[in-house]
Amino acid sequence: MSETTELAVVILAAGQGTRMRSRLPKVLHAVGGQPLVGHVLDTAAGLDPARIVVVVRHERDLVSSAVLDMAPDVRIVDQDDIPGTGRAVQVALAELGDFAGDVLVLSADVPLLETATLADLLAAHRAGGAAATLLSARVADPTGYGRIIRAGDGSVQRIVEQKDASAEEASVTEINVGVYVFQAPALRTHLELVGTANAQGERYLTDVIGLLRDSRESVAATEAPDASAALGVNDRVQLSEAGRILNARTVRRWQLAGVTVLDPATTWIDVTATLAPDVTVLPNTHILRATTVATGAVIGPDTSLVDCEVGEDATVTRTDATLSVIGAQATVGPFSYLRPGTYLGTRGKIGTFVETKNSTIGDGSKVPHLSYIGDTTIGERVNLGAGAITANYDDLVKHRTEIGDEVHTGSHNVFVAPVRIGDGAKTGAGAVVRKDVPPGALALSVAPQRNIDGWVETNRSGTRAAEAAARARAAQEAGHGSQE
Image 1 (cartoon, rainbow, N blue to C red):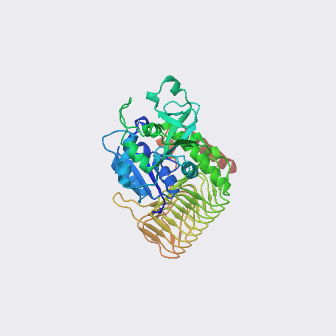
Image 2: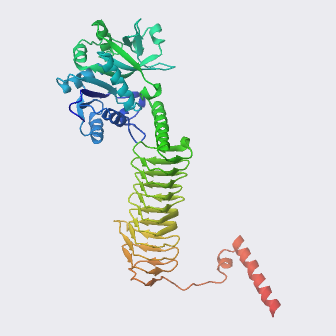
Image 3: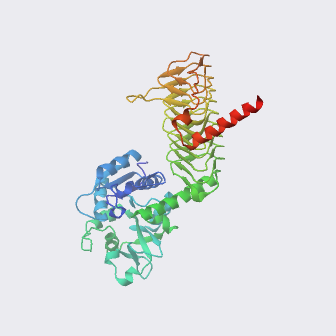
């Protein structure tokens, strides 16, 4: 932010948002991978303002903490017991002191406005020399929004809230979206004159518009190019709609940047994710939070990546992965579950019905199928047989398994941690490995096979199995008799 820029941004985040019917403050509900207020903070920062002030009240500690995590340089101010947006802006102005530039007022529940739209609003405000310029939108159903009432010359005369509107005023389809630019001195002077004589008993910021007109100050309005992007989120229906619009915008942006998205309707990409050119995203795929995907990777179908890193030319198919790293040219899936702390090296493989957690799988190593690998370090060019289990928990603490380079294991092995398998070692099928295996050794846990003839016919008499066994035994005996 530049201290020489004569712009301050005030973000209103004090409301409770009762229509969300949620314990979580409305402005902290997320779309596109970050809270509503996070999108507004990003948009405001794009204008390079001298200061950003966020006004809080409901769940102020929770909201303040989230805001400062996302934007440590903003200033937090508390709204007092006097209700209304006018009062919220008034306490923000007090924080700004003698600031004399332009004040842009935004609502923390309007996540879809883009910086370019606000830059155009600011440019129009300054070009026209208005005391106030507001952003408006025309909608088919204006229910619930303040109506913009224009004078005969087309200028803004006043804003009327839904509950205070006459029948004629309520029929107006041009609405106030809660975005304003004011000259700070004019705003400061007229806010002092705002009262609470309205149906809600609140100090409305919109009343400043009428007061400015009464003082023969100029008030202008600029229509938003996209009405849907200018509307706020008041309930969970609108939250999901905002998410849909934002996602469509995000997917299109990545397509134009060189990413192939086969089915945008079933693809979700958070605004916080990063994709390189020549990535391919297949249907029913979610690329979420801080996930990064390198060039040439193929993701999906039916895949969810949360805070993951995917290397060049990797393939991830029908996989659920969180906080995991997938190396270049590696393959994952189908039906793999990568839990936090998984690291798969270059050209490695995590295959069908494999679960991994807090484990490193080295370059060129493979865990092909039907395995659980937890708290494990696997070296390079290792191949684990089907059904490998690292038994990492002794009912008290977790222990690690260490598997060296060039190890090949048999099917259905259990490695009882803590245990180390040396470089180049091998294990036999069905081995339960409880002791360290030296480099180059073969580990077996073998017991002689014992067959008890006639057990089923004796102990399960009358069952279909016993009948089948009897028939087979009779057939064998008849075969032996014919050979004699």
